Length: 241
Image 1 (spheres, one colour):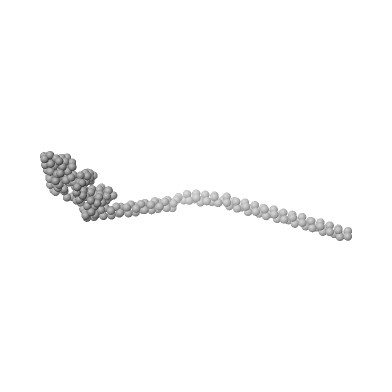
Image 2 (tube, helix red, strand yellow):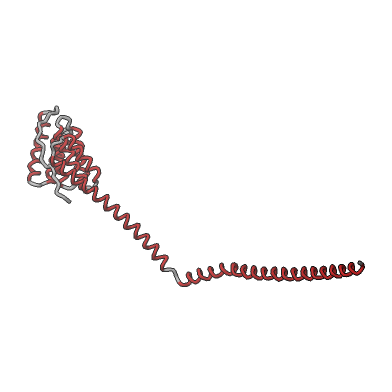
């Protein structure tokens, strides 16, 4: 996978929500403690500190964002996305900070291999902060990954189709001799009635021709007899004259 930029910077914001002085101090204490632990890569301890800060003030943008980063470091992608989303819902004043939340959401989605959702998150980050070159770079990376995956899926589909066609050809070529003999026998049987029909037709034609010859001979005999009778009559008539 190409290198991805990740925004791990921690937010250091003023508390703008009405809390008691003691509650504010406790929240600030947990955030500072979490920041120190985070910088020391003690992510489990930092998670506990930020969670205490969020309990003390659920609307703390700083605590929610930093908790999201800590969970990301621990590879708890779903929980980190949940915290980033909560941060984005709270951050209504600073588009740049909200863009950072979308940016890190895109990174977490990418770690889950949810490429389409990752791409949309990077697009949201760029809408809020068009100058964010890191978001633009990561967007280009995930778009290339989507394109490669589509081409790979298409290639696998074509290979599967070719495999099925090859299997069908092999099945046809591997027919047993018995099946082949049965097919040839059936072909011969189908031809026999046709051959018999031709023989019968030839015999019938010969019979018709014989009958016709006999009929013609009889006609010739009758005509010859009629000619003789006519000649005899003519001779008789001549004598009478």
